[in-house]
Image (cartoon, rainbow, N blue to C red):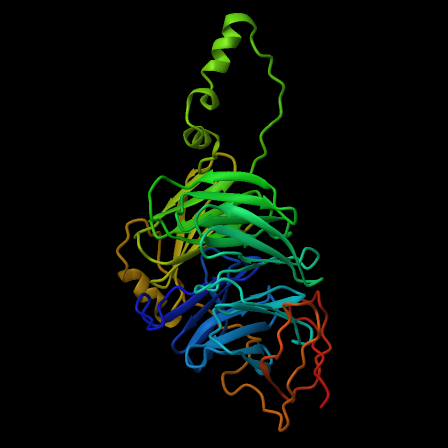
Length: 443
């Protein structure tokens, strides 16, 4: 998620920060390059890889593999796909407009522009389909299921009301349109299995969860009653039991996805039964007010040190315990404990500096929040990290991919493609140390 403006005002050098699909690592983009950190420890923020070069405004990692997709601020229309451990750039694509977001799973890579979406086959990076003339989407809002078996994508179906279009990224067809909110959609996310979608609108008060692909509403949660709250991010836990939501306020909410227990209750007869029905909220209150009574409330909460900063949240399992992680635009990562049984106020366990990691300990010491529990430790360099420097060698005759005919929304022209001369990598799809098999096209 882009946490800073194009000028980097909010976080100094920070331009981008996001978790990978299973919240096992965090990617940080800055004016001087990008870094990847492991999230397998509360006490340490261990550096996996660091690449110093251009200003990186998007960096997305595929699970725990070595595949990363990066976009620079100086070349916002170009997507680079790299193997960071080998220090190679596999290919790059140039698009007609600025790239606003990139999403990956083990089958597809999704690139979102303001009025179009490009769906790539991640095995060979061919453009399979282009969804054109989408409603203006200036934030690049979209979601791609992490699950390859339920490989759906979601994007706003309107910029006037809260419609969400569900698209099958395998069979390349529209599935359903969900009327999620009255106001335009502001946040979307799938759960790990791709069977649920959470959404929030620009009003930021109601969060809804829908079943996928049929689009039936499963849950409805009230984040608060304040107006003009901007939802920064939504994220499910890996087991889909919890959903967290962060905004431009200092509060992060965690909701528990529990289906109501269908226990038969014997209604009292006679006058008591009559008064019970007459006094139920649905009978004597306006429908809008009665709806509030049926909405779920937050199961747990977090109070951040400051309000007004863009942020991204996630729920990870660290040392077999659920942890709420929040990365903020001032380049800090906060790790909180979640009580999965009682909920309530979450306890701050650790805060880490995620930018200028070599100075993180001294900068953490100067941070004055009383909730902090200690300083950030010096991160360690991954022994298998690729050396810094130029990535790959350009082929002398780079081909341009041709789109396959897949429907009326198919693009008439593929993005300009540059391939590199690395030999095909015979890797396994389920090998987290690598990335999906890539077959380079023959000239």
